[in-house]
Amino acid sequence: MAGHGGKKRNRMERDGTGKRLTGKVYRAELLRLQAELVKLQEWVRSEGARLVVLFEGRDAAGKGSTIKRVTEYLNPRVARIAALPAPSDRQRTRWYFQRYIEYLPAAGEIVLFDRSWYNRAGVERVMGFCTKEEYSRFLHQCPIFERLLVEDGIMLRKYWFSVSDAEQERRFRDRLEDPMRQWKLSVIDLESITRWEDYSRAKDEMFVHTDIPEAPWYVVDSEDKRRARINMMAHLLSTVPYHDVQRRPLELPPRPGSSGYIRAPRDSQTFVPDYAASLVAGKGSAH
Image 1 (tube, rainbow, N blue to C red):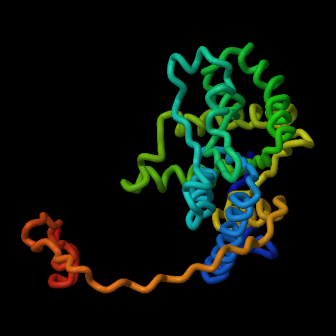
Image 2 (cartoon, rainbow, N blue to C red):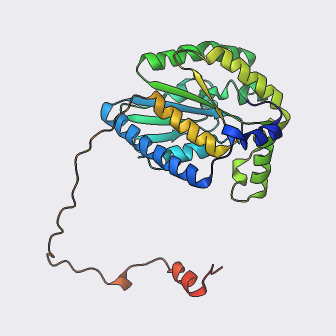
């Protein structure tokens, strides 16, 4: 979590090596990295590998938008997103990690957690949704749990998206004013503004206990979302020993001649109205 001084950081990002990426440079590199992620996906599938990527960080730190770019061209049958809702009453009585285990990948799969078991070390700890005993037990068991995953052959990558208080507040205001994105905000999200230092302390303590050699934390500076996406994707690719997998060449077969099939009359089926025609005729929205 970045500390105070967001305005100064914003100025610094526009100077020297921290200057903002132009749209042209960003789009070109994003597409290149997405092509590499497709190669990574094919390698995972062909090798029967298992890859888990955790996306954690402040509210509005850019986790969701990064996941969206990572998965844009991937096969959802190979790479899937796990974004778990609040646990049910029954789930609360189970071992804490149990509900996450069922989302772990099988051979040839990638799972991206949009928030993960680290909810207990963050929002649950700060908002009082867990007891002190449950929190202490998590800090003790989490490194053990993750070592077991890695020992079993799962590639585990953990990313913390860091954003300043000023930038987070700016993004919150943008969402409040945008009806298309207001759903991204909740009362708990907004309360993170008044509990900034509480979340900072919780994150620091979490790192002390869970930044382990077998599964280290990687911090992504997310003050500039474009740079954050590029940096995270490039780093992930650099940590996996994938290679280009040769796929069997495919060719379109020749279309056979007619065998006497006659298509049903058009008026025997219910087609959706041609709304697009109204746009062409009116050169704008029909509403």
